[in-house]
Length: 145
Image (cartoon, rainbow, N blue to C red):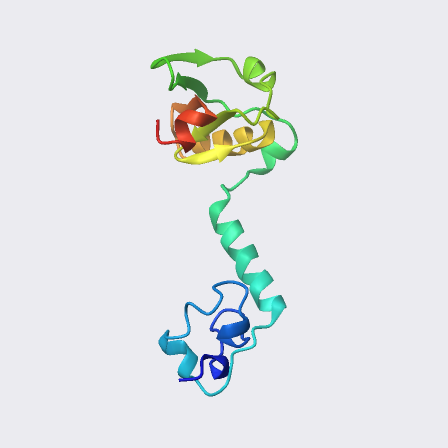
């Protein structure tokens, strides 16, 4: 069996020349198709944009003009196991560029003040009385600690 004649289902190159899997996937059923699928890059971009839009919370216009959502922010410190209400002005002063601190709401990592306000506005519109944000050192979340 000549592996060089099979086409990679991911890169549409021969499996032997594939840089993704270096020939390890040459026995996948997709290699038997006669014609390789050449995806349009515009279609791929549109698919990623649609996925990104589906994952983003909906933002009301009042957030864009600077109005703060009327909802409480409860900060849960994962390391200590404590939680307390936090004023929004204090949250605005957090170091959002600190890569060693991870902030999560409903499993979604927040990396900016604007992102926090968007999520809070979305939850306020749904009628939630408060939003819980989990704050943890990076090693605790990513290392399974």
